[in-house]
Length: 58
Image (cartoon, rainbow, N blue to C red):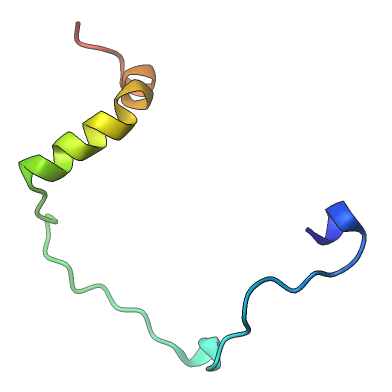
């Protein structure tokens, strides 16, 4: 945004805590479970993109 306007524009609120002290952990199971309903939602919203990237079956 700075390059576009030529001056600094603060975006959003500043963090309340020092983010450099945060620790991110991943405790998801392997493989991550996905339901049939979730697959159908992705196919509905991103089906055209998936066909373009991976080809269409029919």
